Amino acid sequence: MEKRNGWEIITDILEVCNKGYGVRKTYIVFKTNINFKLADEYIELLLDRGLLEHIDKKHFFTSKKGKQWLKYASQLKQLLVFNEAYKALEPEPK
Image (cartoon, rainbow, N blue to C red):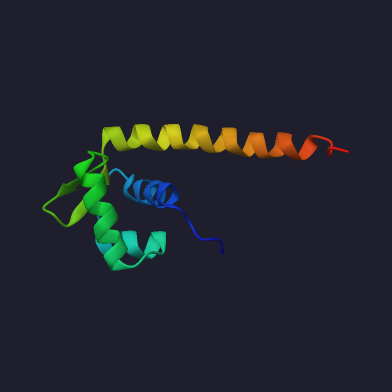
């Protein structure tokens, strides 16, 4: 398995929390395959940036701003995949 960057981890967390109801940190850890220390760091970052919200400090959900992030991240991923596919079609320089 390839190591993920921060952008991918953030996107994974926001997707897991985008259920329409609050999810617990344990659920985030298992679904995103990160440890609790890393989950704490990313959850704090996402709360500070307004991408995540919480209910009673135990249940987290993706905010409206976080849903926008997911939309833009999906579009960017599609562009990057298209770009890689386009590069594969280019002839090798001689």
